Structure formats: C-alpha cells, structure tokens
Image 1: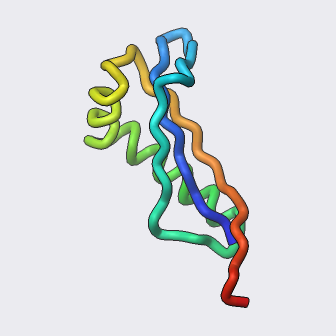
Image 2 (image 1 turned 180 degrees about the vertical axis):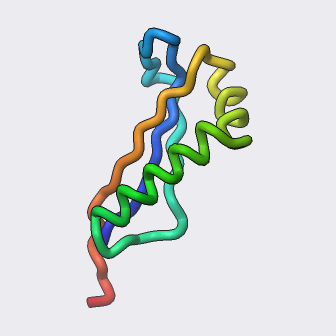
Image 3 (image 1 turned 120 degrees about the horizontal axis):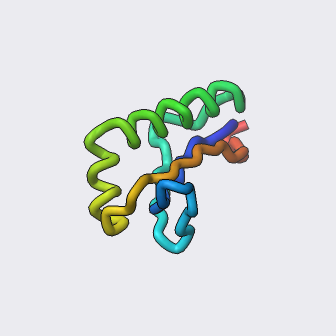
Amino acid sequence: MFEAMVMICASTITLDVDFDKCAYIKDNWGPYKTEYNCNIRSEQMEKEIIEGVIGEYFAVQLGYPEMLYSQGNCSEVKDDTI
C-alpha cells in the first residue's frame, strides 16, 4: 500500500527553492494498492494545489514567493489488517 503526499515550497523564478519555507500536504483518499495509482494521485494533487485556490493559500502562508515549487511523492506503508 502507498500513501501520496505533496511538498510545496517557496521558490524564485530561477527555481532556487527555499526548503526552510515548505508545507506538506498528505492525501486523505488513500492508501493506494499500487505505486502507479499513488503517483497518479500525487500528480493530481500537485496540479490542483498549484492551479487552484489552495495555491493562493500557500502563497500567503509562505510569504508571497515569486513562485511555488511542488514535489509529489509516494511512500510505502504497511497494511496491518493482513
């Protein structure tokens, strides 16, 4: 099983990322049976965050950076029900 997560960080136009100014968003739809499905969800989350109203929220929270840098990833989790 895999869980999706997205990291949003303050960045400059030249993509100098300030890793001290980041927010982490954990997906609440998963976990996913395959890493492939998890990756699809993390990409969907990135797009929704950057292009949507949520991106504006994080821009405010991170001090109105020139850009927002996003990175989605998936981590394997143990399924204790088996």
